Image 1 (cartoon, rainbow, N blue to C red):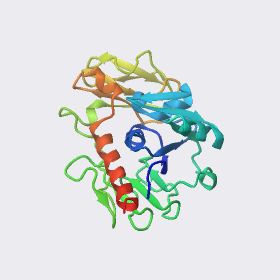
Image 2 (image 1 turned 180 degrees about the horizontal axis):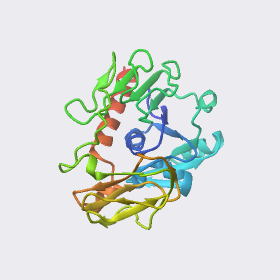
Image 3 (image 1 turned 45 degrees about the horizontal axis):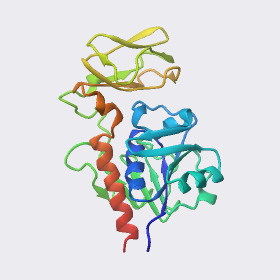
Length: 266
């Protein structure tokens, strides 16, 4: 079977989904991302969901275009690019007929994924049972099993603790202190000091607990709820990391590619 042009629908277009899509696009698959109308994305500079606001989004050497319909999806693919479509209910499935569906929302629960959506259904992280909700589940928890393909059972449960970067976990994450619109004059890539006010929500300040680089920040004006992750400070201080795919996203993307090859390259 010639796998070039294999159609892959990736549900979600945030950081992890974009890392998956980039690897699949490099492998000459036709990739479409489906998203909600206003994605709550933190690492926006490496997330193809930004195409919904910019009409096109480039991450490293991959490009995705906003699409409104089947014709525009086909045009993006003909140009060698990916497509991003607002379609949280997956209404595009009847006309798209993808061979592969990847749930990369990372909601930590099943939001309607079923094993009969495509010839191969892949789910990322906890909340899914391989063999029931999807054909295969990919482990997303950092550590020894990151990227492992699970064909029976579930991924490791959510720890609730952000991944360790330079010895920092929870302190590097910025969270909304209240419900309201996010206000900020900071941009991704800015250097911030410990104690510096990075944003405000409903007039309440959001301070960085660390010195580092603002690696991610939800789009200003977005309505957020208390406790929601709205930003990410990287203590390594490397600005270039703001515009490149993370090691975790690359590992998970490679795992999805392996799952596709194991299913179709026989």
